[in-house]
Amino acid sequence: MLNVSNAVVRYGAITALHGVSFNVEAGEIVTLLGANGAGKTTTLRMLSGLHAPSEGSITFEGRNITATKAHQFTSLGISHVPEGRRIFPQMTVEENLEMGAFGRRGSFSEDMEKMYATFPILKDRRKQMGGNLSGGEQQMLAIARALMGQPRLLLLDEPSMGLAPMIVETIFRIIGEIRDSGTTVFLVEQNAAQALRLADRGYVMENGRIVFSDSAAKLLTDERVRAVYLGEAV
Amino acid sequence: MGAFGHYLASHFTTLQKEFWYLLVGGVANGFLYGMVAVGYTLVYGVLRLINFAHSEIFMSGGFAGYFLMKALVGTTVPSGLSSIGLIGLGIVAGGLVGALVATALERVAYRPLRKRNAPKLAYLISAIGASYFMFNLAGKEFGRYSVSVPQPYINHAVFHVFGAPVLMYDIIIFVSGLIMLFALDRIVATTKLGRSVRAVAQDAETASLMGVNIDRTIALTFVIGGALGGAAGFLFGLGTGVVYTMGFTPALKAFTAAVLGGIGNLRGAMIGGLLLGIVESLSVVFVQAAYIDVVAFGILVAVLLFRPTGILGERLGRAA
Ligand SMILES: Nc1ncnc2c1ncn2[C@@H]1O[C@H](COP(=O)(O)OP(=O)(O)O)[C@@H](O)[C@H]1O
Ligand SMILES: [Mg+2]
Image (cartoon, rainbow over all chains, first blue to last red; front, top):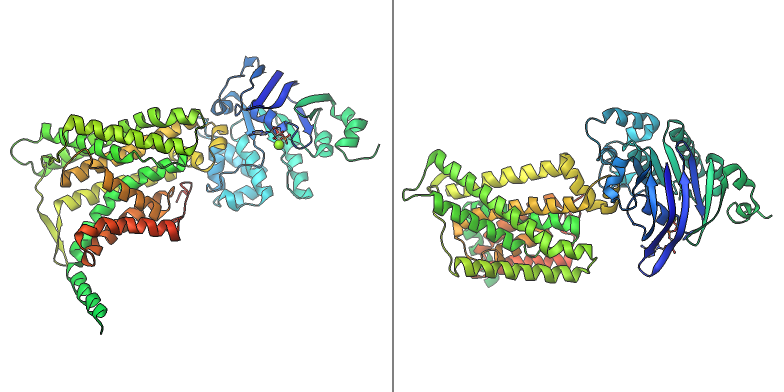
């Protein structure tokens, strides 16, 4: 479904990604793990046109999307839940969801009801300003907003960041449900244990390079992963 | 009672006598300021920059209306429906030319800087350059002297409030100003287009992730702000005449109004405009007419010193 080949991303003189290659197949949850500063967010930004790679190529469903602009991605079928959630603070929950459907034509009220069914708290809060929600509510809104674009591929950047364990549970359960309903998920996380339990496959990134990859089950028992990312003594 | 007490008392007596008369004029000016102020605030909202060439958008609308009236108004002053039609046409012409000039300005003076991630100072210099270019071009092409606009209506007193006459000119400004500002408010608060403007103002990058074309949205805010500024230029010229420097003072006052209401805040700009128009008009009682501009810019300095976020605070994002 998604193929990234030898992608290089630079921020001025700094090279953030040194030729990364990976792929995501339809129906999978693929996770990208790595420490702070490894290049995970940069990878996602590249996958939604916010930062074009200076070398390498990206194809999605057979189309070359390397030079596609950010605002064209939702209509391609890729939605991005950005790091830090980035809710529009002075729009209501309802308006934030409407923004998620910005690229769509026609009515989307049915999908809105679906989101309210999946995230009942958002229905209660639908007239409140996004900026007044709690972190967990904002994360749910960010996910719901991305789903309003009817993506076939959903990009998630550290959805568990800064949230209480119980809420993280809920978010991860919902990510599982999203995949079960037919949307492919590419999940960036620092919370490796939980991400690997949910994912089918994983890539591990260090200093802008993918250092290894395997099925999630194998990675969970891999000693390098256990030592560095699961915080266990080997 | 001391000398200062007498001073105040006598001025308050004047204020009582003149209040309604001054208020009517102040509200009319206030609507014009508001219509120009929203242009500053819209552009500030999406670009975080003050479009100092907005004064020339105002001026271009003034000249568009002038040439149209010169072409359409004959030797006898029109009345009734034909007056309304002509004024409507003047507003449309001023608005269209204002929108066109604003679009050209965005393309030529701002977009290239944005694509290069230029520092804010570069925008400011570019704006001042564009402003000088435009008003000098107008001065060269249209002459250096103020000319009055052929009047498409008879400016009689339509009714009185507490003895103060309300002129046809005031009513034209009240009605067209109210319609335009109300329409703008609703468009920004409730339409998809308005939502895209607010989204870019709140978080441009995330707006683009939602499918909003940032370039197009920025151009659109220039079109909207330019249309209202140009229409205001026509209305102002109708009463005061047109000249290549006509934009300078009214636009600077409108900028004051935008700051007063909270730059970036749409309703703030409208309220700030009205407030400034009224305060300025009433202050004639206390200061000589020659000092009236000092009042407006005194307010600007005071707001910047004591409450830089203005009355309603920053941010275009707010819907309602
Ligand atoms: N806008 C930027 N300008 C310069 N360097 C950046 C920028 N964003 C990220 N970087 C650098 O790129 C590297 C990868 O960052 P990032 O992709 O945010 O990592 P992660 O999401 O894995 O924490 C880091 O070294 C970071 O300092
Ligand atoms: Mg990150």
